[in-house]
Image (cartoon, rainbow, N blue to C red):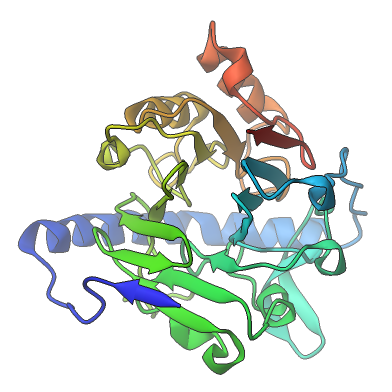
Length: 318
C-alpha cells in the first residue's frame, strides 16, 4: 500500500531542530495559559445541547471522477479525489478529550458533525495532522478501523493507534513523502506543537500536500502563521487548500487568524480554499461567526474561491 522515500531516516537537521525548540517554547506558554480556561469551559458546557449541522452532504452522489469535498465540522473534511476517499482529522463524537471509563472528559461540540460514521463511504485513507484531542479522536478512530483503510500520521503518533486493525499505518515527518494508492503525500512543516499531554513533547505535527496526476490539495492541519506552505507551490496550481481559521483569540502564537490563513493559502498557490477549525468547539474567545466573516473579507474580490462557510456544505470540481 505504501511506498516511501525516507521512512527510516530519523536524523533531524539543525534548522529543523531549532524550529522545533522554538515551537515547543510556544507550546509551553500556550499550555500554561490555556489550561485554566479549558477547564472552566468544560464545566460550563456540560448541560448545553449540541445543535444540528446546518447542511447535510451527499457523498454517495459524488462521481468517481473529479475532486469532491465536504466539511463535516472542525478539521474533519471528507475528500474524494478521482475515486479515492480521504478523511482528515476525524472527530465525530459530541465530545473530544480524555476517555474515563464510558465517558469522554473534554470539549463539547457546539454543532453536530454533518455525517456520522455509518453515513460515511468506505475510507481509503485517514490523514492525521497531529495528536491533539480535537484532531486525533480515539473513539472515532476505533470506529473507522477497517482492513481496507490506510492511515498517514505525524511522527511518533502511531503508538496511539491499533495499527494491526488498519491496512497500513505510516508516520511522516517534515519534507518526507509517501505514496498510497494513486496519491503522493508530502509532510509540510507547520507552526504548532504535537504533545497530547504535558510529557509527550516528542510527537510530531504536520500539514500535508496531496498530489495525483490531475489534482493537488493542501491540508493545513493546525498552525500559527508560517511561510512554509510555499513549499507546496509547483508547476501546477493547488486546486484546494484546507486551512484553519479559528481559535486565535488569544492563542495567536498557536493558531493563525483568518487573514493569515488566507495569506498561507495564497502562499501555496491555491485556487480554492476550504476554511476549517471554527464553528465546532469553543476553543477561544472570538465570536462564533467572526472567523469565517473575517476570512470572507480577506478574500476580497475572490469570494467565489471560498468553497464552504458552514458545516455540511460540499463542493465539487470536474
